[in-house]
Image 1 (cartoon, helix red, strand yellow):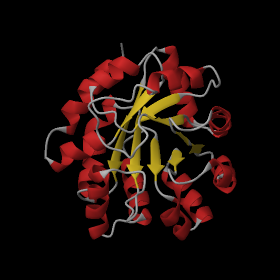
Image 2 (cartoon, one colour):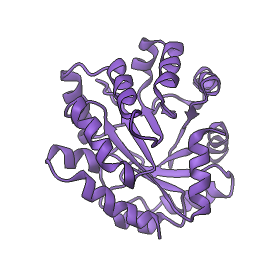
Image 3 (spheres, one colour):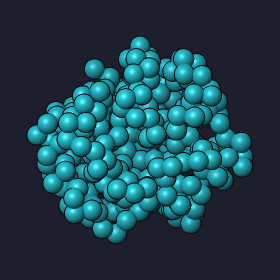
Length: 257
């Protein structure tokens, strides 16, 4: 069992939902990313660090913007491992790298997992990696004891969703919308029936992301999943120089009811 699976098991016993916060690594700069993690770690269960990429097909305008700004500063995977190494000196919060296949492949798959293990990464999410092409990544994750976290969309067929869920060694990332990332006022009406159906087919933890941006979303969905992933709303606060710490603290209250 991976460290992330152990964490989620513990939260279930406490009747608490997991709160995972996404940050684009290096946006607006490396120093701010490291400082933010230090400020919010007491309110969150997982930290996701996004690898900036020029063609982020799963991301909406907010995360696209932060990726472009980070790329202007030449943030790359080596920089991100340095961030993880630095924050690991003071934090035990599980850290997940979320990145597209191209930069990871160019870095070198074996080298990526070796560095990830050495620096203290706990999980990997690759949104553009299909289940059918994931065998090598899953094998390397298993060898490195790094959780493999696949995505399931509202459009994923039942049998395929079951196979994808079975491959997870962390949690299943359920996308709340059929489009790209980005804060939404309303979540799709298809989501709760989808979560109910998926719940009957797998015991793996289900965390919902894409569009989750406020306490109301958590309140409405908490009966049907095991946790939440918030990204674009955080990036927007950073861009507007608003307090991420206060926002995350409010969200964390709703995960504990």
